[in-house]
Length: 202
Image (tube, rainbow, N blue to C red; front, top):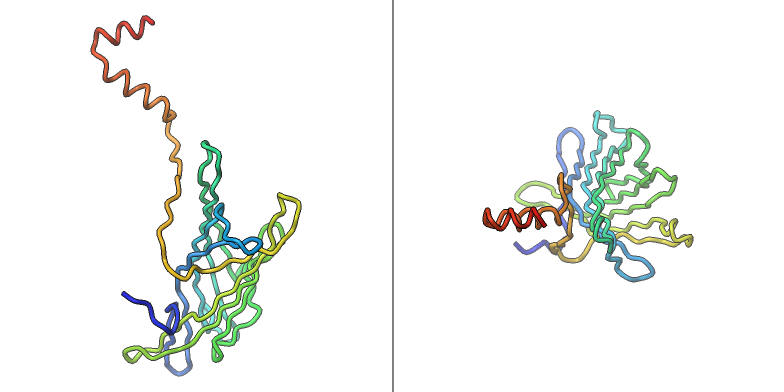
């Protein structure tokens, strides 16, 4: 189904005694370094936000963000390392810096374990669809600091790709034995009884 020209639908508005805003969406994230798409890291963000906050207070916005990170390595042993990190307003790992729901603006900071931050800005618009008010993401910007291991700090841009695509990444599932052991076991299993006796003697 073709996407809306309004942007990417990410949530809805409940109209009651007061307006309630809810965001719940999955976002694919690419990493841009020095103006070029990096191919060693991709992320999937699952973002959930609510206003009034998760316990009904109208004084604030609560958000949680789970990031699944895919790090690619050239090393045959590692290949792709998958990790998960969670940020939440309740524990201070996600800090709301601006929540202007009427104007469709949401800014927040992700606080990482090493003290660095990623600054995220969402611009949204609202549109009636079949009697309901839906929230559409019209602009997304996120910038962090990277390059700590290389010794050169630089801005890292995180962006949502224009179009959805499938990314094939090799993930190693570690077993009790290695892939080489499997090939050897299969080769031995294919031998006749007599040939196996000869192989074992050799």
